[in-house]
Image 1 (cartoon, rainbow, N blue to C red):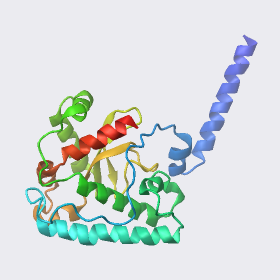
Image 2 (cartoon, rainbow, N blue to C red):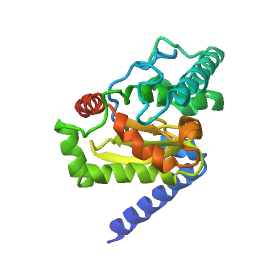
Image 3 (spheres, rainbow, N blue to C red):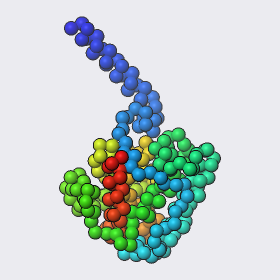
Image 4 (cartoon, one colour):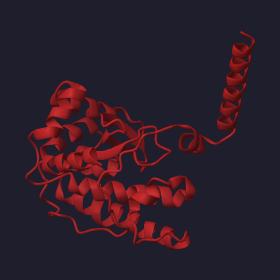
Length: 250
């Protein structure tokens, strides 16, 4: 009994010490150093330069008008790419390696790197998860996983729509695969994303919806919900499904 009491006291004291050490850290450090988070790496290889848009500005007109796409791609997204390259040069980042390496260690870098690396990565993904031949529903293993995680495709749509509509200010709504190989829905503010240790939502991004006003305001004004509803018409489920399969195998 005496040894058992001593062991309990030891565990209590060491537990308090561990909590105290974590509490002394800033929140980003707390997330990265003290929380145990399983990670799914998934396909990697995003570069530091802006890739060509895979369709014309007007190709997604059923959801996003040509003027918005042109402004979004040539001004907003291009600015993130240019500023990212400047930040990478200033901070000695090896741009021959995937951008995902920076995002997973974003606490080591400046705010400028966080904002522009996130903005560039998010937009490079955003263009690819849309297609003029998009819409419909996912099939195969992704469809099965969606039914298992959310009950139905409609439940996924409603959940992602709620994440986007209810996000205060600007940011992104996400479908991710987490470290337990489960699908999750959530949102991140500004240009953060689920690869970053500073994000409350963690996982490998399968699908991301841009709900910054510059993504929709020219056509929809303040009607973010209408933009989200129409956006499903251009989702490239073939791309998202392949991304899910690759991430699930990783």
